[in-house]
Length: 303
Image (cartoon, rainbow, N blue to C red; front, side, top):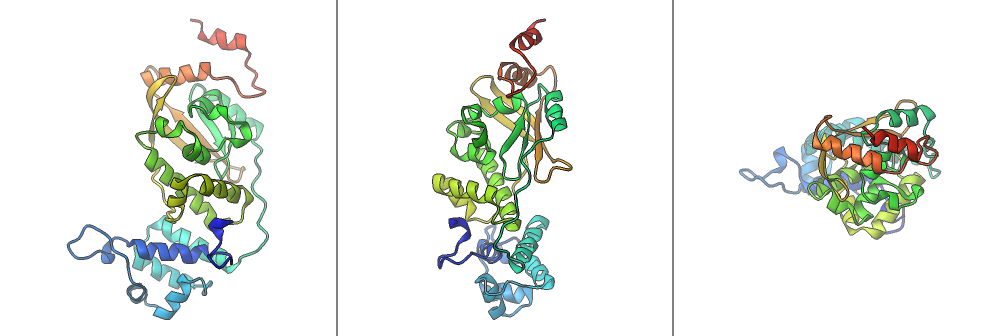
Protein backbone atom coordinates (compact mmCIF):
# COMPACT_ATOMS: atom_id res chain seq x y z
CA UNK A 1 0.00 0.00 0.00
CA UNK A 2 1.18 3.50 -0.82
CA UNK A 3 0.50 4.77 2.69
CA UNK A 4 2.63 2.06 4.31
CA UNK A 5 5.62 2.02 1.97
CA UNK A 6 8.76 4.06 1.92
CA UNK A 7 10.22 5.38 -1.29
CA UNK A 8 12.53 2.36 -1.58
CA UNK A 9 9.57 -0.04 -1.45
CA UNK A 10 10.36 -1.41 2.02
CA UNK A 11 7.67 -1.29 4.71
CA UNK A 12 7.60 2.21 6.09
CA UNK A 13 8.26 2.58 9.83
CA UNK A 14 5.30 4.62 11.14
CA UNK A 15 7.11 5.29 14.43
CA UNK A 16 9.97 6.99 12.60
CA UNK A 17 7.63 8.99 10.37
CA UNK A 18 5.55 10.17 13.34
CA UNK A 19 8.59 11.26 15.32
CA UNK A 20 10.00 13.15 12.33
CA UNK A 21 6.69 14.92 11.71
CA UNK A 22 6.50 16.09 15.33
CA UNK A 23 10.04 17.48 15.21
CA UNK A 24 9.44 19.28 11.90
CA UNK A 25 6.09 20.68 13.01
CA UNK A 26 7.44 22.21 16.20
CA UNK A 27 5.76 22.06 19.59
CA UNK A 28 4.83 24.58 22.30
CA UNK A 29 7.33 25.59 24.95
CA UNK A 30 11.06 25.55 24.18
CA UNK A 31 10.53 25.05 20.45
CA UNK A 32 9.18 28.59 20.04
CA UNK A 33 11.38 31.54 19.26
CA UNK A 34 11.42 34.02 22.18
CA UNK A 35 8.61 36.56 21.80
CA UNK A 36 7.04 34.65 18.88
CA UNK A 37 3.61 33.08 18.76
CA UNK A 38 4.57 30.80 15.90
CA UNK A 39 6.20 27.41 16.18
CA UNK A 40 9.42 26.49 14.51
CA UNK A 41 10.92 23.17 13.57
CA UNK A 42 13.59 21.66 15.77
CA UNK A 43 16.87 20.60 14.25
CA UNK A 44 17.84 17.01 15.00
CA UNK A 45 20.73 18.27 17.12
CA UNK A 46 18.41 20.41 19.25
CA UNK A 47 15.95 17.62 19.89
CA UNK A 48 18.70 15.14 20.68
CA UNK A 49 20.14 17.59 23.23
CA UNK A 50 16.75 18.25 24.83
CA UNK A 51 16.05 14.51 25.06
CA UNK A 52 19.51 13.63 26.34
CA UNK A 53 20.34 11.20 23.52
CA UNK A 54 23.12 11.19 20.94
CA UNK A 55 22.56 12.86 17.56
CA UNK A 56 23.54 9.66 15.77
CA UNK A 57 21.00 7.62 17.74
CA UNK A 58 18.26 10.13 17.03
CA UNK A 59 19.05 10.09 13.31
CA UNK A 60 18.79 6.31 13.29
CA UNK A 61 15.40 6.57 15.05
CA UNK A 62 14.01 8.97 12.46
CA UNK A 63 15.34 6.92 9.56
CA UNK A 64 13.78 3.74 10.90
CA UNK A 65 17.14 2.03 11.42
CA UNK A 66 16.56 1.83 15.18
CA UNK A 67 13.24 0.14 15.92
CA UNK A 68 13.62 -0.74 19.61
CA UNK A 69 13.95 2.49 21.60
CA UNK A 70 13.62 1.99 25.33
CA UNK A 71 10.63 3.39 27.27
CA UNK A 72 13.03 5.89 28.87
CA UNK A 73 14.07 7.20 25.44
CA UNK A 74 10.45 7.50 24.31
CA UNK A 75 9.55 9.36 27.51
CA UNK A 76 12.50 11.72 27.02
CA UNK A 77 11.45 12.46 23.43
CA UNK A 78 7.86 13.04 24.58
CA UNK A 79 9.03 15.55 27.20
CA UNK A 80 11.30 17.33 24.73
CA UNK A 81 8.51 17.61 22.16
CA UNK A 82 5.89 18.59 24.77
CA UNK A 83 3.58 15.79 23.66
CA UNK A 84 0.19 15.51 25.27
CA UNK A 85 -1.02 12.22 26.74
CA UNK A 86 -2.63 10.94 23.52
CA UNK A 87 0.42 11.70 21.37
CA UNK A 88 2.74 10.18 23.98
CA UNK A 89 0.69 6.99 24.09
CA UNK A 90 0.57 6.84 20.29
CA UNK A 91 4.37 7.12 20.14
CA UNK A 92 4.68 4.21 22.59
CA UNK A 93 2.22 2.09 20.59
CA UNK A 94 4.06 2.74 17.32
CA UNK A 95 7.38 1.79 18.87
CA UNK A 96 5.91 -1.40 20.35
CA UNK A 97 4.38 -2.28 16.97
CA UNK A 98 7.69 -1.74 15.15
CA UNK A 99 9.52 -3.95 17.63
CA UNK A 100 7.21 -6.93 17.10
CA UNK A 101 6.31 -6.44 13.43
CA UNK A 102 4.65 -9.55 11.99
CA UNK A 103 3.93 -9.91 8.26
CA UNK A 104 0.56 -11.62 8.82
CA UNK A 105 -2.08 -9.13 10.00
CA UNK A 106 -4.49 -10.23 12.73
CA UNK A 107 -8.10 -10.78 11.66
CA UNK A 108 -10.32 -7.68 11.94
CA UNK A 109 -12.93 -7.54 14.71
CA UNK A 110 -16.34 -9.00 13.99
CA UNK A 111 -18.78 -6.84 12.03
CA UNK A 112 -21.79 -8.63 13.52
CA UNK A 113 -24.02 -6.38 15.60
CA UNK A 114 -25.70 -8.29 18.40
CA UNK A 115 -29.52 -8.30 18.47
CA UNK A 116 -29.81 -6.45 21.77
CA UNK A 117 -27.78 -3.56 20.33
CA UNK A 118 -30.25 -3.27 17.45
CA UNK A 119 -32.97 -3.08 20.10
CA UNK A 120 -31.02 -0.28 21.81
CA UNK A 121 -30.99 1.66 18.51
CA UNK A 122 -34.76 1.19 18.22
CA UNK A 123 -35.47 2.42 21.76
CA UNK A 124 -33.46 5.59 21.09
CA UNK A 125 -35.86 6.80 18.39
CA UNK A 126 -36.39 9.53 17.34
CA UNK A 127 -32.80 10.32 18.33
CA UNK A 128 -30.55 9.38 15.38
CA UNK A 129 -28.23 6.55 16.40
CA UNK A 130 -25.93 4.02 14.76
CA UNK A 131 -23.19 1.47 15.41
CA UNK A 132 -19.89 1.77 13.54
CA UNK A 133 -16.77 -0.40 13.27
CA UNK A 134 -13.25 0.65 14.24
CA UNK A 135 -12.69 1.85 10.66
CA UNK A 136 -16.02 3.74 10.72
CA UNK A 137 -18.09 1.36 8.60
CA UNK A 138 -21.79 1.77 9.34
CA UNK A 139 -22.92 -1.58 10.77
CA UNK A 140 -26.40 -0.84 12.14
CA UNK A 141 -28.67 2.18 12.48
CA UNK A 142 -32.14 3.41 13.25
CA UNK A 143 -34.06 5.42 10.62
CA UNK A 144 -32.81 8.82 11.80
CA UNK A 145 -29.26 7.51 12.14
CA UNK A 146 -29.18 6.91 8.40
CA UNK A 147 -31.24 9.92 7.27
CA UNK A 148 -29.32 12.52 9.32
CA UNK A 149 -26.30 12.16 7.00
CA UNK A 150 -28.14 13.33 3.90
CA UNK A 151 -27.56 11.17 0.85
CA UNK A 152 -25.91 8.33 2.72
CA UNK A 153 -28.83 6.06 1.88
CA UNK A 154 -27.94 6.54 -1.82
CA UNK A 155 -24.98 4.23 -1.25
CA UNK A 156 -25.33 0.45 -0.86
CA UNK A 157 -25.10 -0.74 2.74
CA UNK A 158 -21.60 -2.20 2.32
CA UNK A 159 -20.26 1.14 1.06
CA UNK A 160 -21.54 3.27 3.95
CA UNK A 161 -18.62 4.56 5.98
CA UNK A 162 -18.33 7.85 7.91
CA UNK A 163 -14.85 8.68 6.62
CA UNK A 164 -15.81 7.83 3.04
CA UNK A 165 -18.92 10.00 3.42
CA UNK A 166 -17.01 13.02 4.75
CA UNK A 167 -14.40 13.00 1.99
CA UNK A 168 -16.23 11.57 -1.02
CA UNK A 169 -19.95 12.26 -0.77
CA UNK A 170 -20.95 15.47 -2.60
CA UNK A 171 -23.42 16.44 0.16
CA UNK A 172 -20.98 16.27 3.08
CA UNK A 173 -19.40 19.72 2.72
CA UNK A 174 -22.81 21.38 2.54
CA UNK A 175 -24.23 19.36 5.41
CA UNK A 176 -21.27 20.25 7.67
CA UNK A 177 -20.34 23.58 6.12
CA UNK A 178 -19.65 25.17 9.55
CA UNK A 179 -17.44 22.38 10.92
CA UNK A 180 -16.21 20.34 7.95
CA UNK A 181 -12.50 21.17 8.36
CA UNK A 182 -12.53 20.24 12.03
CA UNK A 183 -14.54 17.08 11.45
CA UNK A 184 -12.23 15.74 8.74
CA UNK A 185 -9.12 16.45 10.83
CA UNK A 186 -10.62 14.45 13.69
CA UNK A 187 -11.63 11.67 11.31
CA UNK A 188 -8.10 11.31 9.88
CA UNK A 189 -6.55 11.51 13.33
CA UNK A 190 -8.71 8.61 14.46
CA UNK A 191 -7.66 6.49 11.48
CA UNK A 192 -4.01 7.45 12.11
CA UNK A 193 -4.32 6.24 15.68
CA UNK A 194 -5.68 2.90 14.46
CA UNK A 195 -2.88 2.64 11.89
CA UNK A 196 -0.36 2.88 14.72
CA UNK A 197 -1.55 -0.38 16.28
CA UNK A 198 -2.99 -2.27 13.29
CA UNK A 199 -1.30 -0.88 10.16
CA UNK A 200 -1.88 -4.04 8.10
CA UNK A 201 -5.54 -4.55 9.00
CA UNK A 202 -7.48 -5.14 5.75
CA UNK A 203 -10.47 -3.02 6.82
CA UNK A 204 -8.12 -0.08 7.40
CA UNK A 205 -5.77 -0.50 4.43
CA UNK A 206 -8.62 -0.80 1.92
CA UNK A 207 -10.31 2.35 3.21
CA UNK A 208 -7.13 4.42 3.47
CA UNK A 209 -5.93 3.26 0.06
CA UNK A 210 -9.22 4.32 -1.53
CA UNK A 211 -9.25 7.73 0.17
CA UNK A 212 -5.62 8.45 -0.72
CA UNK A 213 -6.42 7.85 -4.38
CA UNK A 214 -9.73 9.70 -4.50
CA UNK A 215 -9.40 12.60 -2.05
CA UNK A 216 -6.50 15.11 -2.13
CA UNK A 217 -7.84 16.55 1.15
CA UNK A 218 -7.49 13.17 2.85
CA UNK A 219 -4.00 12.62 1.39
CA UNK A 220 -2.85 16.01 2.72
CA UNK A 221 -4.19 15.38 6.22
CA UNK A 222 -2.90 11.79 6.28
CA UNK A 223 0.66 12.99 5.81
CA UNK A 224 0.39 15.22 8.89
CA UNK A 225 0.44 12.20 11.24
CA UNK A 226 -1.96 13.86 13.67
CA UNK A 227 -3.41 11.39 16.16
CA UNK A 228 -5.65 13.76 18.11
CA UNK A 229 -8.89 15.25 16.91
CA UNK A 230 -11.13 17.52 18.92
CA UNK A 231 -14.39 15.78 19.76
CA UNK A 232 -17.37 18.08 19.43
CA UNK A 233 -20.23 17.72 21.90
CA UNK A 234 -22.52 19.51 19.44
CA UNK A 235 -22.80 19.36 15.68
CA UNK A 236 -24.69 21.64 13.31
CA UNK A 237 -26.32 20.12 10.24
CA UNK A 238 -27.60 22.04 7.21
CA UNK A 239 -30.01 19.35 6.13
CA UNK A 240 -31.72 19.53 2.73
CA UNK A 241 -34.94 17.98 4.09
CA UNK A 242 -35.44 19.51 7.55
CA UNK A 243 -33.26 22.63 7.47
CA UNK A 244 -30.66 23.69 10.01
CA UNK A 245 -30.41 21.83 13.31
CA UNK A 246 -27.87 21.65 16.13
CA UNK A 247 -27.70 18.41 18.08
CA UNK A 248 -25.82 17.07 21.05
CA UNK A 249 -23.37 14.38 19.97
CA UNK A 250 -22.09 11.41 21.95
CA UNK A 251 -19.97 8.41 21.01
CA UNK A 252 -19.04 5.49 23.21
CA UNK A 253 -17.22 2.17 23.04
CA UNK A 254 -19.51 -0.86 23.28
CA UNK A 255 -18.66 -3.59 25.78
CA UNK A 256 -18.07 -7.09 24.48
CA UNK A 257 -17.84 -5.92 20.85
CA UNK A 258 -14.19 -5.03 20.09
CA UNK A 259 -13.89 -2.01 17.83
CA UNK A 260 -17.61 -1.19 17.69
CA UNK A 261 -18.89 2.20 18.83
CA UNK A 262 -22.34 3.63 19.39
CA UNK A 263 -23.04 7.14 18.11
CA UNK A 264 -26.17 9.09 19.07
CA UNK A 265 -27.50 12.62 18.50
CA UNK A 266 -30.00 14.27 20.86
CA UNK A 267 -32.15 17.39 21.12
CA UNK A 268 -34.28 18.83 23.90
CA UNK A 269 -37.95 17.79 23.45
CA UNK A 270 -40.19 20.63 22.35
CA UNK A 271 -37.44 22.47 20.49
CA UNK A 272 -37.23 23.03 16.71
CA UNK A 273 -34.20 20.72 16.65
CA UNK A 274 -36.21 17.92 18.24
CA UNK A 275 -39.05 18.51 15.78
CA UNK A 276 -36.50 18.16 12.96
CA UNK A 277 -35.15 14.79 14.12
CA UNK A 278 -38.73 13.59 14.66
CA UNK A 279 -39.48 14.44 11.02
CA UNK A 280 -36.34 12.60 9.90
CA UNK A 281 -37.31 9.55 11.93
CA UNK A 282 -40.82 9.44 10.48
CA UNK A 283 -39.81 10.13 6.89
CA UNK A 284 -36.84 7.76 6.68
CA UNK A 285 -37.41 4.17 5.53
CA UNK A 286 -36.83 1.62 8.32
CA UNK A 287 -33.76 -0.63 8.11
CA UNK A 288 -34.11 -3.92 6.26
CA UNK A 289 -35.94 -6.43 8.43
CA UNK A 290 -37.36 -3.70 10.68
CA UNK A 291 -40.75 -4.64 12.22
CA UNK A 292 -42.37 -1.33 11.29
CA UNK A 293 -44.93 -1.42 8.53
CA UNK A 294 -46.13 1.54 6.51
CA UNK A 295 -49.38 1.51 8.45
CA UNK A 296 -47.53 1.65 11.76
CA UNK A 297 -45.47 4.62 10.60
CA UNK A 298 -48.65 6.44 9.55
CA UNK A 299 -50.22 5.63 12.91
CA UNK A 300 -47.39 7.38 14.76
CA UNK A 301 -48.00 10.58 12.77
CA UNK A 302 -51.68 10.75 13.79
CA UNK A 303 -52.59 12.86 16.82
